[in-house]
Image (cartoon, rainbow, N blue to C red; front, side, top):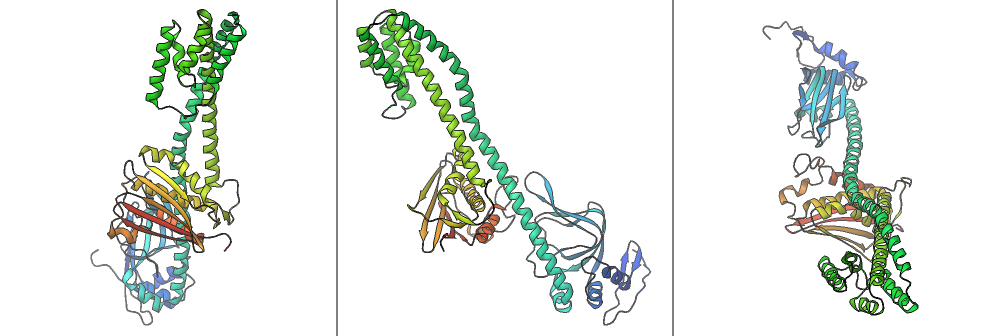
Length: 489
């Protein structure tokens, strides 16, 4: 601006400093009056407000102009005289508003704050007037302006609480989203198995009914019926050696099919009989007593019964798997329990967490082993918060572990505390960033894959449960340790 017309007033013990606003001069007296009406700072003594007016720089922000930018050091303290500024953080799905300030608020670097660079961008939403105090003057502010410093410290604490609650809520929502995706994948397999089994069950029941009618029409003798009962007993018996491998099962099916073909029987029964305890010797015994069409009816009846029982067993196993997952979710979230400190069984919490993250572990073929000390004491804490700690730490370990890697979850009583160790065999944490792993919004993951809140929130929750969290890392082994007080201490 060329040759602005300044109007200056002399304030006690202050230099003569003019301000220019929108082409018209604003004096310290005018600014002082505005600060005296400021919602946050208005109660401070006028001499302190006068110091702030004398040392601040008046700024105008247009709509869309940045007050601060992510990754760029914050210039100083900002007193909003009018307007509207929002602070947005990109957590992988686009910018999200986490804070906002209007005329009468303060933002930027506050006395005793550790803020250096902001986690997001602060943008003016409407024309905004700001009085900015450079951060180099904050030390002098704290010595010259006691009341303003007290007000700003209270504002800093309020801001920290808002950020903490916002961070925790967002991390919970992110964890919930990941958990929901993994749970949907986990539930899809058994639900699909139930659907397929129910669809096939009707055909198998029809086949079993037809085979029963054919068997009844064969008019077998008592000795023949006794042999049929022996075949049936082998079909319903559980395999002593457990489930066969796919290759062994295929070889057994081929052998039974060859036997059926050699006796002129329907080879379609081979698949159903192969997954039972029926042996070729038993088939030879029944063939020695029953022959011709009655033998075919016996084999069809036995195979149909095996098929029905196999489908029913598969449906039951899938339903139990779904019930187990629902129980794990319920145990993980403790959704039906009050938020009070209680004696917590770490074993069930760790098992539920590993079960819910099973889909992610299988995706990378990572083996997750849980090793709990026998008679492990319970700890005192908030069960849902402890489970969120395990979820964050184990998920980080899964991200760090290599393809076909391994993770060990170990819990032991050590002195007066219970220590949980989560160990992965990943590449380790570089030494130059070890001091920053717990910093909020610090992450080494690509954009959209991490927001840098998991370990920060894990540390907060550990502290809220009177615990301590530490870590050690080297190539091939990273260990996070959480020590918690026992319930009886």
